[in-house]
Image (tube, rainbow, N blue to C red; front, side, top):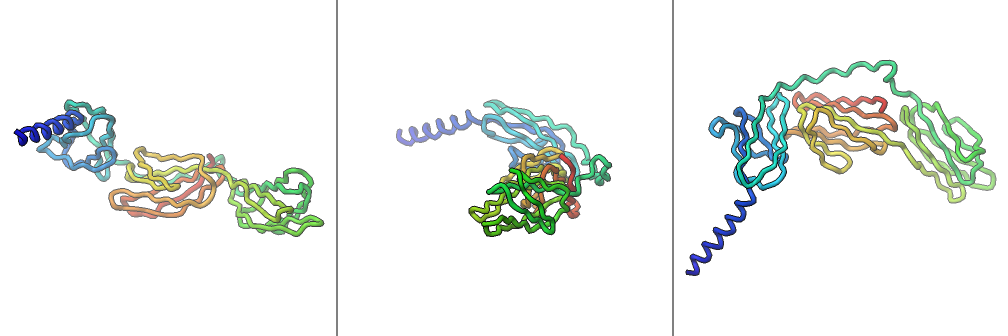
Length: 272
């Protein structure tokens, strides 16, 4: 009697688990890699009319199918207690990566930089490289500076000089604050930019700013990124490219990566 009770308990638990799961029939041609919520679950075959997924948890799921050299397809499904069918349309060959078109005159990025200077006290002498300016207002704006690294010195009678360095990028605007009272120089802001990734294959994994993101569209965009150098990693099917990229103020950093051919990635810049 005790054994029968144990069997009944086990059967009840199994029945409850089964009630929270359903089967998914992925109807597609053989030889496609199938992913469930980003996790590979098998390769489609003729015997199963594609791929039959058993006991998928109830709720919202993403089914993705892909084949090397073809444009992947994704489907959003709601799985219930009963069976679910996902009918996959034939995959289309992936288009070749187009060469970067030359910039038109309207698209040429600015070649000079701007430096905005504030200080405490307000009035002082500012030396940026070999350029000497008298600051007699709350803000001193120095435009048309060539890109590069500058030594900046603040001087005023009765105070010790304070100095620092700032690196200017083409088209960027940096703000520097000098506190002669405290004896410090601070780069307050280096600006904000954006990132665009164009990849082959289209679906891949991107690590950027300490986060992992799945690229599921032809173009991957991120906005409001602090200007400066950042680590970028793009990976797919055991292949990976890692590099440091520079985000420039008010510019879009465009990264083109071809993981299939192994060609070096290309980085260009364009106005936002």
